[in-house]
Image 1 (cartoon, helix red, strand yellow):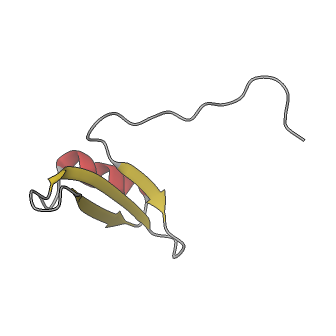
Image 2 (image 1 turned 180 degrees about the vertical axis):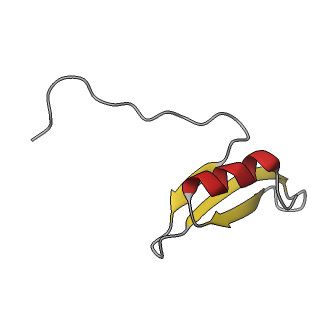
Amino acid sequence: MAKEGKTRRKRRRGPGEGSIVQRKDGRWQASIQIGYNPETGKPKRKYFYGATRKEVQEKINKGEGT
């Protein structure tokens, strides 16, 4: 049965903010799109990993490794 009343909406991340998910092994992974491959047209992605969600978010904000 579905709950009645207000439902919580997920906040969407803005353009260039990427996505953050927790992996099955417990680590956190983030990915951001950095452009497109000119030959195939597929998106290029940059991945970040960390022990905590906050750590990964900070890496995205700094642009670490780019």
